[in-house]
Length: 580
Ligand code: WT7
Image 1 (cartoon, protein in one colour):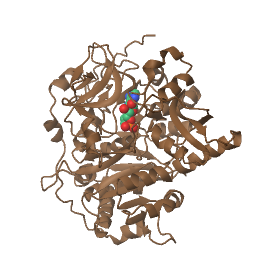
Image 2 (cartoon, rainbow, N blue to C red):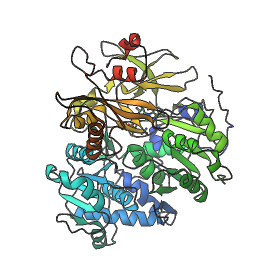
Image 3 (spheres, rainbow, N blue to C red):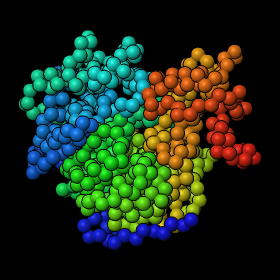
Image 4 (cartoon, protein in one colour):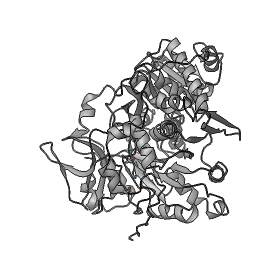
């Protein structure tokens, strides 16, 4: 079925009205001029996000409106957030933690996490968020790959996920508890440290724009997670995209529903709205349809950035919850992270008063690269067009290492011309893998797409076997290597199985060791083992015991064949589905 283009008025108050003109007139130098820079001439992401506002007319404006699980709320002005993050920076400094040192965070959406992120980058240390629903194994792996010197967490998370792996983390010198003292030895009392840090302003040292500020782990098909390094000048792209793609401007109440444990929740849940000088709403609680409508209504959210899985859950919760709501403050809704089906785009228009505007980007790109814009026609099902300043193409790699664009309408790999400010600058400790992402001046994304004659991009799929479940990118190998540690499991393969709400769920196929008999109890034990080690977000939701797994002649597991069988595709078509 062809979906009709949603025509937009050239709304005079939109930040981007004429797409072609915005692209033609764009330069990154002009975009950079929207930031202040440090008094010393450098550029620091944390300073730009809070300190410069704290010194100007936004000092008393609410920067963060935090909504607690229990119904409590806390507002922090730009001045307060600047002062608190100064304290945190001073705590790090006092511990001897300096430029380039990696500070990891494992915490839910609490105000202290935001303070720690800002303080870390103001201290020129590198902030590295971990998802609080990770189990001990993903936490251990990332902390050791990233040689974390500091971990900021809570008592409960420390006990549940860190205590058992701490002896493996030889670089980890300091664990700061955000929620106060603990009886256990070797843990620092965060609130007491902040108190003792005093309230003299912290002077942000000269920061080179290309100095690392953030480290985000992401997954590939094989091997260990990759640490994508982002630099301070990513701020230029965060602010630019906040304006053009999210339409942020003075007076906005912005709500990004993503968790800061993932890149969206950091780039757009922490930094971008602060860079834009708006009020950012943070909800500590997990998804709940009624609560979410309440937040949109009561907090008078103006711009909302969310994800397809969450939107599908809202759709499922029924129209009654949306009916009769006053959503008149809402001006723009955008989505990211997984394919957004046209039905959901138009559902937004019917039930929330606005089409959902899909955007596309990745951990590696650091900021939105392709988007649908508030005052520009939307093609439901399309990811939109490149952000002004970004050149995107659909390409094919030739055997001699060159890259060729394919004609409009044809499928190929989505690629971006190198050189935007939030482009990742390396995979930590793996320059070869980083180099393989680039060819002929292009960054190759690993996504398959096509472009139509009007320049809109359409997502086709992934070129590799990574899984997108509820918007989270999971590497199959990370799950498989834990499954085979179960005493009964000889071999494991993991795929993303299509699911109407989560997009995909993780399904595992396992072969048992000789002499181990399959039973419901054994299967439950394997799943429980995986959940314990990996955490609920990463563990398989379904498991099947099989006699053998399909392999290529070179011995690689053919995950795509398993997936094709799961989908009931005819075996004859499977040749094209082999692992690349
Ligand atoms: C992968 C990146 C985007 C930041 C958060 C996730 C998929 C992203 C879309 C979209 C279809 C999408 C791609 C991409 N993806 N946006 N609008 N439509 N797929 O970052 O965890 O690095 O995941 O998410 O496959 O490569 P990430």
